Amino acid sequence: MNNVTISLCMIVKDEEHCLERCLESAKHLVDEIIIVDTGSTDRTKHIARRYTDNVYDFEWTENFAAARNYAIEQASSAYILQLDADEIIIDNDNILKAGLDKDFYHITIHNNVDSGQFIVHQFARVFKNTPKYRYVGELHEQIPVNYDTEEWGLLPCYIEHDGYLQRNVQLKDKSNRNMRILKKATAQNPSAFNYFNLGAQYMQENRYLEALEVLKKSYASVEHNDLAQRVVCQIVKCLYELKRWDEAIQLGVDALRLYPNSIDLSFLLGHCYLEVHYVRDAEKCFERCLTIGNNAKAENLVYQAGAESYLALAKLAETYMLDDEPDKAYTCLQDALLLVPDNKMITQLLLEVRPNISYEELQSKLAPVLPLNQQRYISLIGALYNLRNPLIVQFIESSSLTVTGPTAVLYYLFKGDYELVEQELLKAKDKDNFKNHLKDVLLLGLLSGDCSVFQAMKSKFGLSQQEVKWLQQLLTQGEPKTSNLSSNLKLIWRQLVEDLLHLHKYELLEKLLAYAVEPEMRYIMSERFVAFGFYEAALDILVEGKHAAFNYDVYRLAARALEKIGHTSDSLFYYQQAIKINRSMDCLYRMWNLFGDNIVEQQRLLQEMKKLQPYSDWVHSY
Image (cartoon, rainbow, N blue to C red; front, side, top):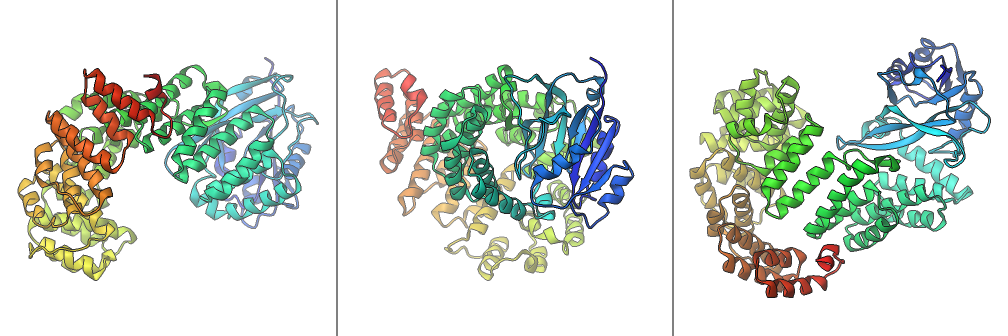
C-alpha cells in the first residue's frame, strides 16, 4: 500500500481538561489537524492552536452531524480520521501511516465505564474524504456506509474513550443535552435509529420503563440486522434491570436463535439465569460466550469487553461455586488471570473461592499464572484489602511496600499494633470518607477489649441513637437484649463475624453469639460459617423464624450444610421443607444432584422442573 495523507477532524467545546491528551496521541499519525470549536469559554482554542493553525468557529445548532461535516469541508487530505476530545488513539505500530487503500475502516473503541470495565464497539472512524461520506444524525451521528458494495477493513489500533465516566458526564451536563437533542430528533424523525438512541439515553439515566417503551418502537421499525441485534439486547437488559427475569429469558432465548453469535446476548442471558438459580442454563450461556469469543468475535460490532473471555470465565466460576465445585471455579479464575493478570476483580473472586486459604498455598497457586512484580503486589493487596483478608499483612511485608491511609489502618489492625491503628484513625478522623472506618473501629474495640476509640469517634459515623446504644452494648459485653436491627447494623454484624473468622478469633465469636438473639442474626452468622467451611457450627446456631420467606432461606442453608458433611437424607428433608414454601429450581436441582444414581427419583424431579417457568433448555434436553 502507498502512503496517503490523513486529516484529523474534531469538533470541540470547553475541552481544556482533555484536548491536549487527545492531540498528543494523534499528532504523529496525521498530516493535518482540523479543529472546529462550537462555543468554548475556556482555554480550548488556545490549546488547539498549539497543534494547528486550522482552528475554526461554528455556531452550535444542537446538531453534531452539521458540525462534523463543516470540519470535513476544511480538510485537504485523502482520508479523514475522526476523534473526540475525550478520546486518545493507541497506534504504537503506526498502522495509520503504513498506508490506507479501502473506502473506510473501523477502529475498535474501548468505552470506559464507572464499574472499571469497558464496552467495546467498532465504528467507521477512518474514511475517504469524498462527498458521499458525510455525517447524518443530530446525536450519535454516523457516516452512511454500505458493507456489501464498499471496501472496508478493521484497523488493529484502538481508541480509548472516557466520556461515559460519570464525572465527565456531569462535567459537561451531557445527560440533559443529549435527552433534549434526542427527543427533538425523534419527534421530527421517529426512525428505528433515533428511538434506539433515545432508549439508550433513558437507560443511562436508569429510567428502564421509559427505555423499554421506546426500544420496542425501535424494534418495530428496524430494518438493519446489526441494529436489530443491538435493540433486542438492550430490551433484554431493561427487563433484567426491572427484575422481569422470566420475560428477559424468554426474549433472550428467542433472540439467540436469530443472533447465535451475539456475545452480549449470551452473557446477559447467563446473568438472567443466575438470578432464577438456573445454574446449568447459565453455565451453557457463559461457555457459549467463550466459544463466540474464539470463533466469531469480529461479528460483534458492540459488546462488553471481557464478556468473550475473562468475564465469561469469572461468571462460569460463579456457576461452579453454586454447583459446589470450587476446584472448577478456581481453575476458571486462574485461566482468567492469565488473560488479565492485574485485574483486581478477578483476583478478589479467586480469593473469595477460598476465603481461608493460607499464605503459602495462595502463593503456590498464584505463582504459575501471576508472577508477583510490584504492580501485581499492589493489585493483590488491593483485593485483600477489599476482602479484609489478614493475608494482607504477609503480602505487604513480603513486597516491602509502604502503605498509608485505610490500607495502613487494616494492616496494623490485623497485625495487632493497636496503638498504630489509633494513630492512623486520628489522622483520618476529619476526612470525608471516615465513615468507612466504622468496621475498623468496632473490630479494634472487640480485639483490644477497649471501646474508648468508638466512644470518642461515634459521632463521626452518622449512626442513630439506637444503633450507637446497641454497638456500645456489644463492645462492652453488656446484657444482650432483643432488638430490631437496622439494615446498617446487619451489614456491620456480618462483617464483624467474617473478620473474626478470618482472624481465627473463635473465643470472640462465642461471645458474639450471645448477642445473636434474633433468628436473622443467627442466620447471618451461620451463613458466614458455611462460607468458611464450619458446617456443624453453622447447624448448631441456625434457628427458624416467624416468616415463611425467611424460613425458606434457613432450610436451604441447613440442607447445604448437611450435604457438605455427608448427611444426605437430612439434607433432602430440609430441601423438601423449603419446597413447601417455594417450589424453586434451586431446591429441585440440588435434590436431583443428591439422588445420584436413583434414576427414578431423578426423573420425577426432572418432571417437576419441567413445570417451572421460565423454560429451561437444560432440563428439557436432559
